[in-house]
Length: 219
Ligand SMILES: [Zn+2]
Ligand SMILES: [Zn+2]
Image (cartoon, rainbow, N blue to C red):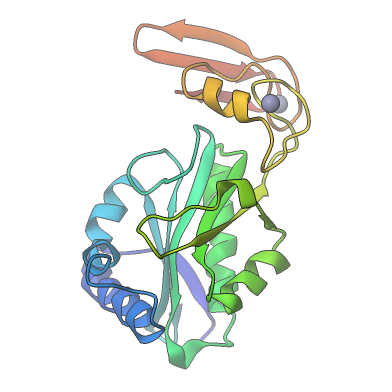
């Protein structure tokens, strides 16, 4: 049976939690403090999207992609997606499951209107780094961070759209710091896909911004 990547079913939360914790622990990437977060598949599925890779009827991989902010979207501004907790079972290494999962995250981010995808990764996860670089992610050293003392995370980003929604200039993973701050409060003024001026409406509850070609985003 071919490899299939799809959203997780509620009945698979426990299996995906076990797989995620087992892979992280087996590779030495987990700690007692982190394991509850790794196992919180149900919580992730509520505010983000959890995808699984299925091979021969077995769940052999899982990943989380957060496209709407929230607790799983660390380091992100509005309009950015974050990929978290990519795991592939040892017996499925080399099957393409990891790549298929990350590609599905990019599709999800695009469908949710995100213009950039970010991720953080431990220094020793070199197989994953090669995959990210093959898919076009670039290093973003100015975003590297330490969630706990002694754990250094390297970061990557991949623009999905060419233009910055705030200033209308070419979007880069590391630049536009002021634009990222204003995106926390203000609607985009330019369409990230075509650079057209957006028609912006500010409402008491939020805002909408409409590109005549690419439709409406809201926040
Ligand atoms: Zn900008
Ligand atoms: Zn547009």
